[in-house]
Length: 171
Length: 175
Image 1 (cartoon, each protein chain N blue to C red):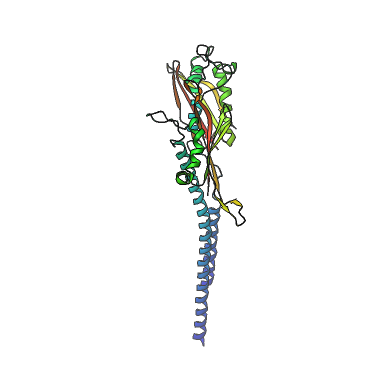
Image 2 (cartoon, helix red, strand yellow):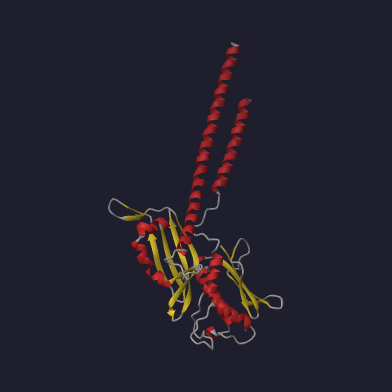
């Protein structure tokens, strides 16, 4: 009778240990490439700061200028969203140019590393009206719905209000 | 006779219990060994990831590469192209004396993606071993790559102002 009890204990302990080892072995393997938490922030910082070198991308007043994305083009898009823009990169309005250019730049970096991302930019007018999307959201493969790293909002003060831009990055 | 038989049975039971006890202990040791192996590999991966992050941060804040602004704080996530062009010479010259202590076995590359594609290899020290016949072969078991998007400031592209190109820093660490 005692031996029967011992046999039952051995079986139970063996099962318990098998569960434990199975659980330990099933732990998610770390990938060969990993995403630093600050990837969204560093990407956004670089993107907003970069200079555009495109044909016809000159301000009428200051010839030969190479505009920066945030300081020049995004501001131009926010102020002149309903009129002719100061900058005409690739012969387009600043807002249209950014809608085309930003996805290209994101694709050369984040897209190249198979990351999904979501870029937003909206203008909060001075009189406290509803925010206006000045650039349609840029999403790769449906954007980020679950766990994601955020760049936080990059504010830009303009004469039309404050432009907030932000980027989400996920694997 | 009855007593003898009882004693014999009792002895047999004791031996059986001890036998099962030692089997349990052996099973426990085997399972703990397997679990430790898995836990060790995970810890190795975690340490490698930490080393990769450290290497990225060291690189981004190196005075030999960062976009300095005189006495003011340097720019975030920015590499100066003028410094970059000379960086490889500097790193090669002091690789074993100084930079190996910072970066250990790793490869650090800066890639420019806009407006033109360009690549600079700043530091390259892979873990290798030399065989008896003189052949050099890799000696690393795991490698981990990390990418950080940066701007590359070029002060010579246009007279009187800085131009910020887009690129990324690729750091690969080996263990």
